[in-house]
Image 1 (cartoon, rainbow, N blue to C red):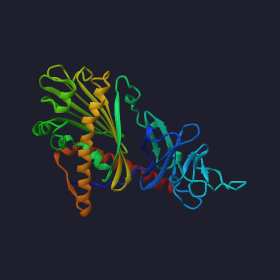
Image 2 (image 1 turned 135 degrees about the vertical axis):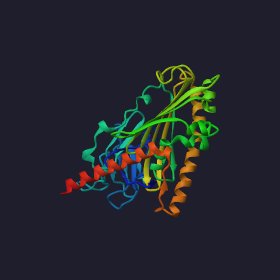
Image 3 (image 1 turned 90 degrees about the vertical axis):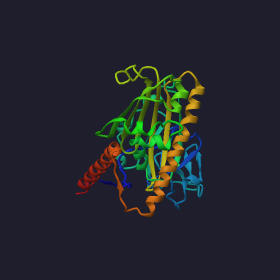
Image 4 (image 1 turned 30 degrees about the vertical axis):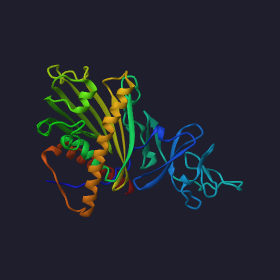
Length: 356
């Protein structure tokens, strides 16, 4: 059995375009998604907007201009566009031709995310946006977050998260553990309507360094990882551990080590992506320092992943048509790849039918 690495994009879907605090009032953010240069900014009402980063007058990047009261002003000849992409001012002109506009993209801001729809705007359905209530509950889930540029195909991040046997090798000094224990972990994985899900158990295991620093376990623990891939490119994660013998399987919500993470890989190009992650402290919520320590423990692991994924892409680029081999631990990874291919095939069939 073989596996390829490059997948086409699911167009009619929500992608994470930016963290809310990346788009400041009065400023703008340049970001390329699916090879399309975009500009994010806020209108006079504070509402986030995203436009094609190309003025319709002479093609200058709008990110060379400034955000003004009425919208974003082109830095070349001063045309101003509002959040819908419509030109609202042309210096020296008494009227504005209706075709003087740039493409706008549907965006929705909630739970510290700015989501963007890259496909047919008329099909943008807000009910399909991932609900992540943990960002709304700062008391129970204080969290930290980051954006990282990574030079690899976005699905490599999904592969990385859907096969955790790499933990013992790539993250041995932080969240990893014994390689043999990881290889013997009990895994239940399945494809879902929106992606794939798996839960992974390591019982009577030595707590890894990060867990030990956070909780101070005195002996072995029962550990679990609960991962859900939600197409097109997000993964929701819940890590936990409790002392052996306390019935972790029956009651995962009991006191112990609890860590919730959100991951999203938004494709920039075929071989680069924007990696968004947040990590929520569910074990020492009243101690702000604990969340800072969590960041200091977690952030280096993603830099380790970045190094691996960029190394993969560099080698694959030397012979892109050469297939990769699938091994038994790739079951959840394969479910995720199968799900994204199915959804892309369904989208293409719908588009073909609409074109008839």
